[in-house]
Image 1 (cartoon, rainbow, N blue to C red):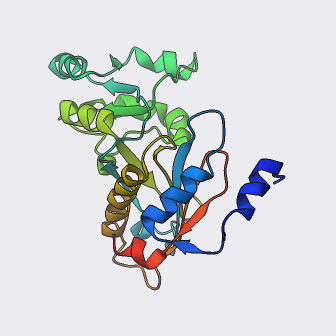
Image 2 (image 1 turned 60 degrees about the vertical axis):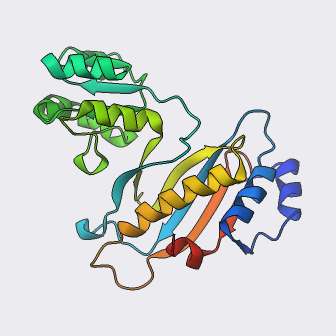
Length: 232
């Protein structure tokens, strides 16, 4: 990938091979965020897992103490009293079967997270080909298939994020914005790593966390000490 002059200049300002401690890494990554917008700070965790094996899949969710800095739009599939509960809890959109053609045929995707009550999963399952590739399919492990829609919505709005392995066995997760303080980013990072470490598959042999990099949307990444990250 071809990099611009500003990106290359940022790389010269620090030792990119160095593994930083958490707060020090957040200080550096904030310096690397030079775009004219408030860049998202994202963590990339390379694991020793083999996601082709179901027992080594990593998927879950964690509430970041300081949120992500992003306004999250929540769609809830529910009926009757649970639909009323979802609306009262602050869901942006609530519906049932009538939403299927809107999403399938009209391409409506103006939401960031989908929550569903268990009885609605047969309906939501019809949207698998649309929601699945975009990572929007509700999942019990992520807490998005639940009867407690109020709790799910409140946690998502408060900064709950999902994490999962991609095809390269890497987890990519946003932990905030460049405008966050170093300490807030560090707090969010440690909350994430605590959840990732607890999710270590029992069947995994060898090193679990192979590398951890934190990077802004447009700037270069900073490596974090993997031993410290594994202890988070």
